[in-house]
Length: 309
View 1: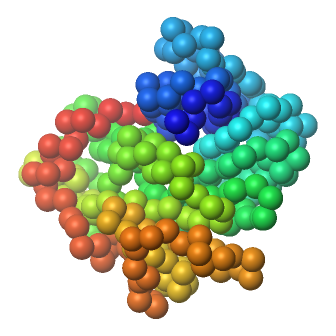
View 2: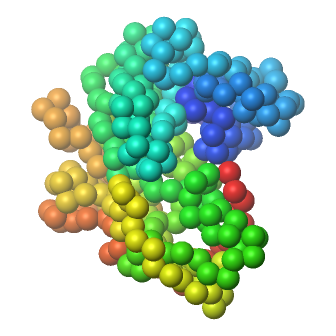
């Protein structure tokens, strides 16, 4: 089995994805060790208590992806890395751009260097439409790309729910045209497992998932509510785009996902997975032009399973 008797390190491991991924791996595999690498000792304490029965499998490293020396210590003996550490709140990143650069860009570069020098077999990075390609010939780096996980911290679902719990009768909409993709934590974890098991290096994996209108989400959470349009925030997008037109020249479509393959001289087309078809040039996978949409009623059913992370 892929992760049996292997050491896995998760950066940002105390976040919603890290906890879900850890639970999935411990349930479906028999890893040698899972290292949780993050900055917040309190969150590590909470997580260690939650996974107390797996204490012999878990190790908690306090550290920052900005700290190269600490990363090198943590990566010693690691087989697989899932890079989930990032600053992701758009307004905070817009207001503190250099802090975002230090974590999201410099931190990613540190991950690449540490993985190369420490002999890590494979790295999967979590990203969105702001993805980059940390690729080389010596370590297998790949990326999974998806939008905001349903119910994740700082996303629209907990924001709307909090307003309703506080007695609000209206839910503010930044722009009536706004759409988003819907992906659950479990679907995100399964996409990472797919990347870990199938990647040859340099690919970006994108799940096929449904879209929804923000106005429909508001009506699903509070039927009949007023929806004042308040204006889009700086740095916020109308639609999530997972495959750009620029990506399309090397994108293949499969039954349940897309793969954007690297476009480099060293890439061998024989590494392209069977069963897919190349998309047309200029293709774009956007939440605004998706072919699968959730109705208000479907959103209401799916909200029953969404917990805030």
